[in-house]
Length: 448
Image (cartoon, rainbow, N blue to C red; front, side, top):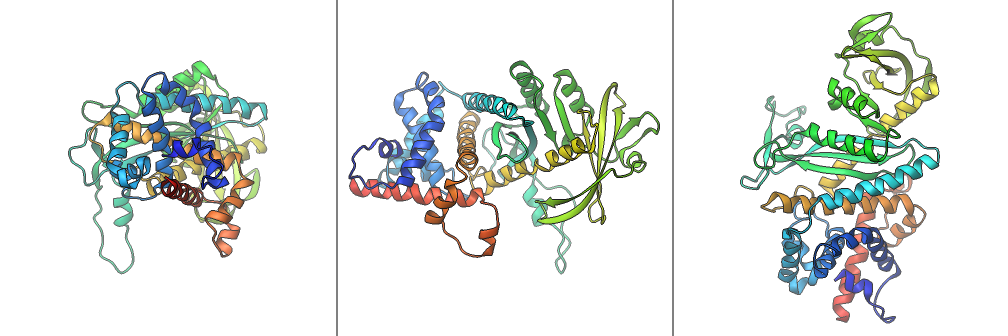
């Protein structure tokens, strides 16, 4: 349907300039990928691929957003929803293409953007993190494994006036999710890699293998021109080992109980070692996670890891002056020679919050936990298309920042100080796009 609307050259057709813009930008974004698909699969399936991409943009529902029976109504029209569902099924079941095609598409776009950032004198950042896709009601889907439930943690959090919840871990069926975003300070991120994997069954995988393959690919094609930013889950010896092996710079939030070696202080736990170093800089920072501004100090020193004593590392200590939050310890392979570089590393780690927002948006807005596909490969294809949708939204925010406020004013207008003062959320942008494309679909069906 959406390709038909895009190709409709009738000047009297009931189309808006906004819908034309979104459909055309979506076509340009997918064009390199569609050319590769056209060489592998039938042209009708390539057309369905574009229509499915746009249908995911239109249909907003947390629990049913990726159900094929719901999306089918936007492919062939609501009166022919079963036919649309069959077209989507044929696309996902086709053995002639796989989700690795979309992975390569993301990587090539990331490589081009890295060159662009370097030409502008900016340091490219690769933001790493992991999450889980929870399928708590499922039993027989292919690829399910046991994952710790983040929803269970939230629901059983102790609240005053209520019974004490269970203290043991809550595990549910699901599968793991490793994501990498490419960004720079002050820039909107883009998707570099999204991988879903399971720890059981036929498609059993180890999470560290995904990181190893990504680092190997980066070393062969890009070199050591990016900074990998990682959270405390990656604070271990194998992270340092692999970064050294592939000659990659890294910035990881280090755990306070891990041992580090100092030339004068000896080998101590990180928090004990950090006590010996006084602040060399002070600044007021904005904590986007907690929506507060706080006064912080920074200190740094050269250290080594016990397993890699020939590799110099630098420890950065960030302290909250009012002690409202515990100190933050950052370990990096980049030589910190002055306070400016230390603050740059601090801001680079704080920029990592974007990938947390990615997981939240993908689950809450794009419905990544709603697919009910039996087979693992088909599910990977659908989730990869959803990742394309998310990257397309980020591309609009990055390249059309002046157009978006006008677009939102006409298609998703809101009042109040909160919306006037807050930054433009991706949720509101997708709602506006949904309104535009749904209006175009209704006009197409009425004229047809």
